[in-house]
Image (cartoon, rainbow, N blue to C red; front, side, top):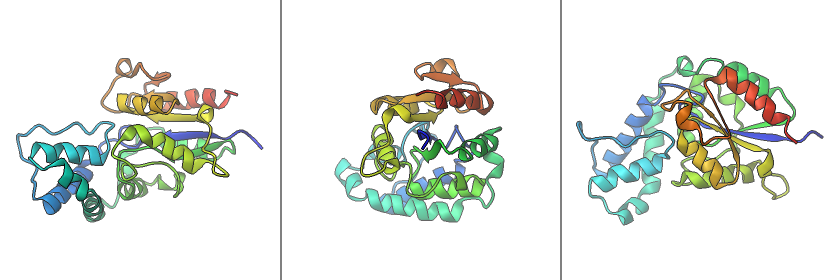
Length: 235
């Protein structure tokens, strides 16, 4: 049996680009329906890059004067409402948002018997799954694997959840054979929080120099394939 390497991919900015409009609208619709809070024009919006949906929702609600206790009490309602709204708002076809060379990369990885693919994303899981399905790449990421914003508002705990789900016999997948792939400093931080290696790709809002905290930072998915090949050669 080959040693299995677990690659945990972020979605927005790593696999897809410009696929967040309906997602943002769905989250705002949920905050309005559940808390009566409207996103105001002219008010600075919290940066979404690398953050969980729950964390973004909390910041908006706190700024609108909603108490932390009320936010906690209705967090499940916000999540469920956001997912329902996204199912209604999500475009039927998001294939144009798939970043260049990503399909070829996923084809290559999924064909190997020493690779397991998963997601580590701040998206609520229902949103993440539908987004990737409409983009045409959902089949690469099996259900029951990965970790999502619906698992925790704290992105730092998500890699450990994903490793546990990828494990066997109740033992989490080994840290030394797990790599987080993302496009933001928060992807790097969540990898470090679980003692994992991280490969960063500058296809999101941050350049290579801003991603220097990763073990390796690359420009695009073409370079990413070479780096992941090197990771696979690690003992």
